[in-house]
Image 1: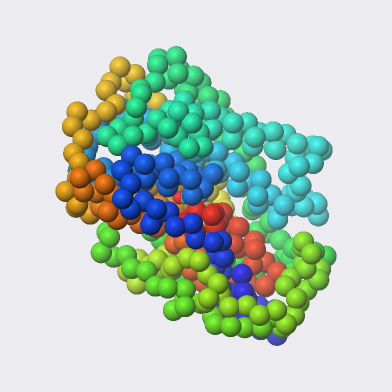
Image 2: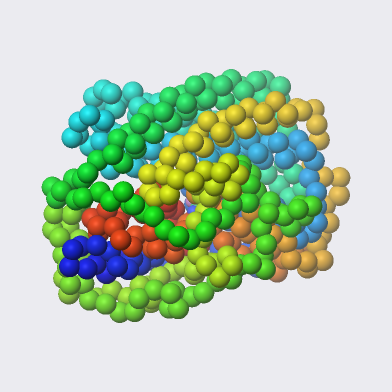
Length: 420
Ligand code: NFU
């Protein structure tokens, strides 16, 4: 993160980019079979491998024009929502250290053995465990699911497994409601403060923390869309990408340093930085502009949610806790464990371009593929955090520099995903 700040310490330009080395997954995919690519794509990330696995599988299916049975869709939906559940819970751990126990000046250490935080931390871990266990049942594995395949799923669930998922989801719903209420109270308490402490510095908290004027992009409240849909909710023609050197600042020298900034101080004065050259991600745009993707984009698009700023974004994510569990329970109810889960006919592909989006925890994950004679000719991944980099940069403008990371954390960034 490279920030240009004015004499009052307010950010004028924020350049947030990924310097994680590119792994070349899109190139690696070329020449592989459509079965191999979703497995490779899921290795991009250990938090949201489900999103990449499903988006890649469905981009292949869109290219070869293969419709899957409804019970396979239900299993994929359950898997997707289970992944979202564990990811929201993980995010709570990551933002709690920015926040205060209401009515006190004590910042929250999620790892303390003391109450009231201990109970919250245990609840978070149980929610993650519930999400991962349901994901394992529906997807074969919760990290890199092996039950998904081109044309559907390898296996349906047994009746016992369905009951187990149902019981876990019902338990999760009670915990998620309590966790959502706790987090919203803590976030509202933060929002009401005049100032916050960062490394012993008292920093005024702007009411507009994290505001930006970019648009939102979401393709479904829960799942996603594809070029096979009757009414697709994403338009590949509205997407274009520019390179980092067309977007970020050029070479700069660090001229402001703060040793108190946690942990270990900011980058030393005199260090040369060059986001233009160092960034390892492109800048994807929709209608010529960076957009925000993720929980708030989904709630704004499908539920008229309109709270701006970092707190509004974090609250939107908390609201997805119970929403995803209600939807998961509906999907489990709808699952017929005797239904078939593999398409009768799986074409080899004629080289048509297909795309699929998956509403990953952090937002719209769009994969594009071209398959011919059961070989992948082209594969591209437009990942949530990649969409959000440039939007988050815009959201940094106007904030005290010490709070830049608080704004960035609102996006729940997955830099590993963004740079594939
Ligand atoms: Fe990932 Ni690690 C999420 N959520 C991101 N960004 C993937 O789609």
